[in-house]
Image 1 (cartoon, rainbow over the protein chains, first blue to last red):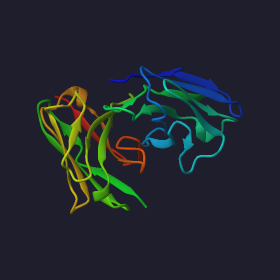
Image 2 (image 1 turned 30 degrees about the vertical axis):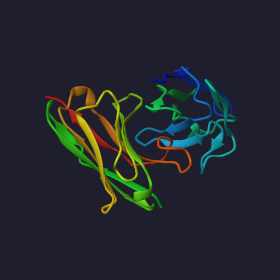
Image 3 (image 1 turned 90 degrees about the vertical axis):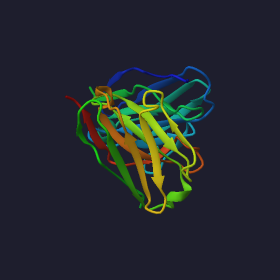
Image 4 (image 1 turned 180 degrees about the vertical axis):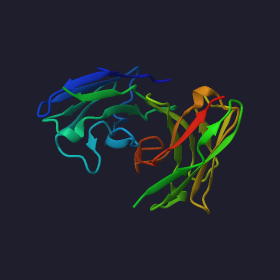
Length: 107
Length: 121
């Protein structure tokens, strides 16, 4: 089974600054990597698929990159609505696996 | 508009059974595989079970294999999760999830609002 590891667990950033979240797979998942955003009391929301294709409804300040085992989610100029928990997930092989999440909080 | 509406959660004692339902609308239900994903209180996401579009193939995480069973009724646009021999560690919000077209079974572009299952004596 593929294990997904996210870092850091918590990231404190001031509004207007940028943030970089990392995700590592224990073996290659090619580009079969998704990112989700989850806000308190809400279901997760697909943010990226194919590692770098932004899902509908998210602005261009969000970008995704990487392939193989190393992936990055970058958010430039953080807005108040961006503070949430972000999960990566591999869907390359069964069983699908999520990272433990990175909590992006206001500094 | 795609909608997924879970129901059937509640409070149940260890060893008990519960059946969750997910009513779907806004897409051609019978064309899509579907999954259940859960989230324990304050914890991360865990894929639980998946089923093919026609319902002839099912898949379960090791943590629930032999205790949970996923099924679907394409005539009713409804997904089910039968949960038996429930344990305290099954306590979670259970989401049904639809995959993104073109991304296989397990990249989820729509999620329900979830239904809470609490297993406790």
